[in-house]
Length: 142
Image (cartoon, rainbow, N blue to C red; front, side, top):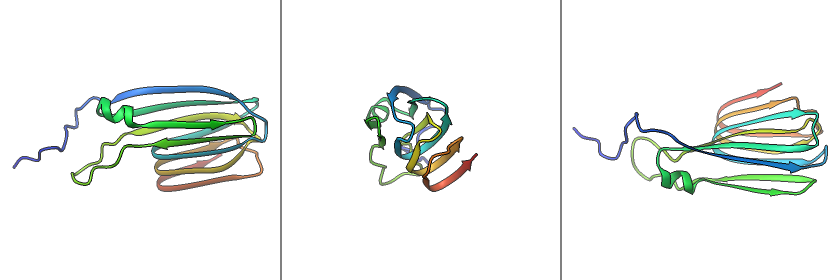
């Protein structure tokens, strides 16, 4: 029996890195939306927001279809991840993932972190609001 289109487990993972630095106020509002992957947010004694993201996929076309959209001002930063449409058939979805590592002022307000599947870490946050929603996976708060 042959299962065409299933893909090999040994397919190499392609990666692309995104890095940006934004000047923000200590109480800036931060919202992040991601489909699959990780969102790791670290509060620190800084006056900027550093975003490091690693996009991963099994094909060049899938990798280029994953989009990271950032809307930033000194008072708010919104990050939205756009994934290609998931296949309607097949045994596995290989649409790709995005892993974010973000460093913000510890007093920033995390007004919304949304992740469909993966891992959320919020470490060192002391702002007035911290809201996170996760479909499948793990959430860690420190």
